[in-house]
Length: 126
Image (cartoon, rainbow, N blue to C red; front, top):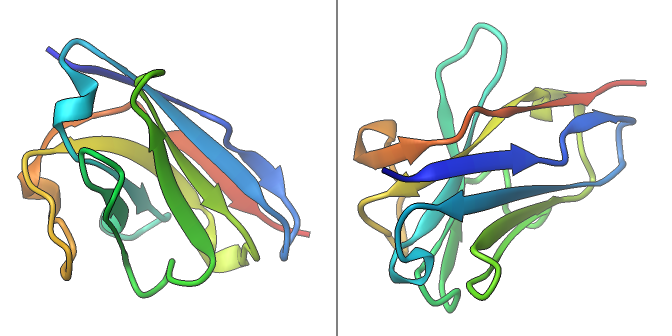
């Protein structure tokens, strides 16, 4: 089993920034890609960003490109999502995910995820 625990969510004003963290345990973290998804109220869960096992490659959903940055620290078994220039449309529960695959040029689907974190709420509002 893999345990994923997110932190760092909260309330932020439009244009502000937040940094989400996800601590992983239960398997060799550095051997696997990691990803972030989100679910906005009334919407399906959607892909946000993914990073390869080494951290050398990353891929973003169009909604995240240029504003979000995914990174990882394999020594700390932690993956991060730095979110800048936040918009009200970014309001959602954000989930850390351990997918079974990493794509360099397409979204990972929820069905390709083996493990999920419990989620952390991000609210962008003035």
